[in-house]
Length: 240
Image 1 (cartoon, rainbow, N blue to C red):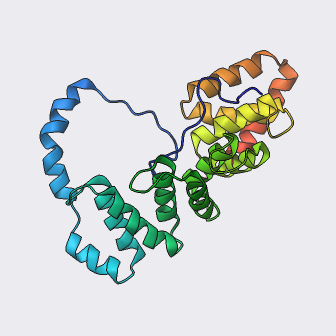
Image 2 (image 1 turned 135 degrees about the vertical axis):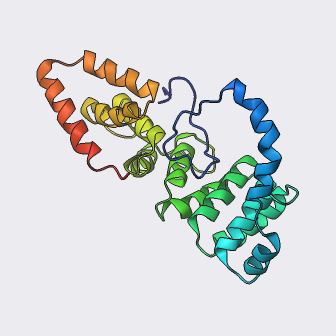
C-alpha cells in the first residue's frame, strides 16, 4: 500500500507550540551571539523553583507543568527528564491537556521514562479529546503508522488530521489533502484535496503547493471555479 507521505512518514511532535509548522530560518551569523547570550537568557528565564515546587507539591497543575518544563529543559536546575516526567504525570492525572501531551511525547521517544508507544497513544488521546491540536496530529500519525501504539486505522487518522487541520495546523492540512488525493481512509476527492492543500500552501508548505498545482493542471476552467469556491469556503472555517 502506498504511503501518503511521498518523502517521509510523519513524525511525532515534541513541541506543544508548533501548531503552524512555520519554517524556522537559522542564520549562521547569529550563532556567536546566541552562544554569548545563552547563559544570560537562561538566568533571566529561570523560574523560582522553590515557589514552584511549593505550589506543585500542593497540587497546583500549572506549577507542576512549569516545574516539569524546568527539569525537562534544564532551566534554573540541572536537566532531569525523569523528574520532568514525574511532574508532567501529576498534572496529566488532573486532566491538563498540555501535560498529557508532554507526557505522551516522553513515552513516544523514551525520554525520562521507558519507551512505550501504547502509553504515548493513550496520553495523546486524552489531550486530543480536549482539543489539543498537536496531540490530535500525533494520534493521526500513530493511527497511520501500523504498530505505533495502536492498530493502523486510516479512517480514524483522517478524523484526527481533520480536527488538527481545522485548528490551523499546516502539516495536518497537507496530510489530509494528500489522503483525499490518494483515496486513503476516505474516497478520493480532488476538490477536498485541493481545498486542504491550498490552506497548507498558503502557509508556505512546498509539498502542498506542488499537490495543488498538480490538481489544478489536471482540471478544466469550470472545475477551477469549484476548486476555488470550496477552498475559500473551507478557509472561513479554520480557527486562527
